[in-house]
Length: 392
Image 1 (cartoon, helix red, strand yellow):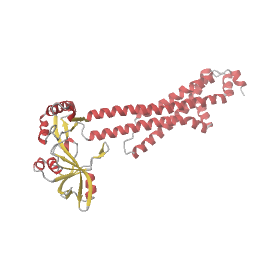
Image 2 (cartoon, one colour):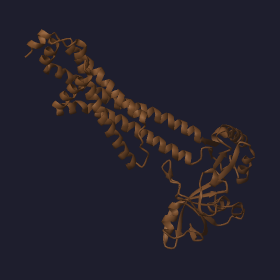
Image 3 (tube, helix red, strand yellow):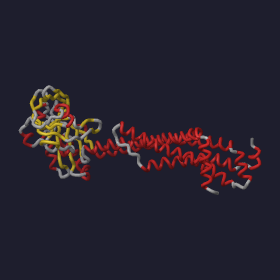
């Protein structure tokens, strides 16, 4: 059997009925492209969320404290929190006081968030200074009215002007800008550059918050995250009379693992749904191949009459169905990558299609072609020459 001649005959049969062949491929094209688009976008979303979480610090532990202000229990002071740095597993303990404020420079007003922080905040939350300096222990101890501003606030208040040394009004109180933060972008849907940082003790007095309910802990390294969490938990339980509801600890590593598990399940589920289109496409190939066998009955009879073997006829029709599904798979791959890339750019997230997904999708399209081509090919191969030649 001449494979080259068989392929030529397969392509001749396909291009002889261009519209029918394209409609036959359509199910495969849609199936392959759908698999690539869905898996690529899910992985892109996962990568985007993972990057956002990692940008906040891979060794970060966030503690939310639910204080009882009526009986003055479950409350930690600034000094209480800094004592956690005595643990070998903890590098920094960074207390934060939050509030929403209106800031003003000249005639421009802007609503943003205010965070009272100390010197450890910069490293703990993985920020960097673009210009000027950060808040010092002296600023904190003296409750200085100084501020470090994010790039969004700089843009809204100062435009193209240099923010350093400028005096801004925060809810009617004057603060001097001593530094600006480097652009950090967004994480978990929030703009990390839309904030103003001031000394935590200044913020406590300014916002009238004597207690601290949010603390960021930076573990010494990834290996010490679990140890640090255990030590923090034990210490807080001791301070809060073993009240487990008084606080919550959020671990970045656990959050990343959960997100990866969820998105992995979603990828499989969406990929499975899209694969149904491939099966539908395979059924379409089988139907068209059955029609092709019927139309070419006399041709099959002539070939068998002059000595064509059953295996030759079988392989010829299997190759034709494989060529149809293979061409559909190639078009589907190209279309899927292109649509995924465009959608990724529109959604502002990475959309790089993994090579193994391309290989799997294309291979599956070929397998579909062979599987659903077996029955029509076998039907053609079993035809008796006499019956085939008599067919009208």
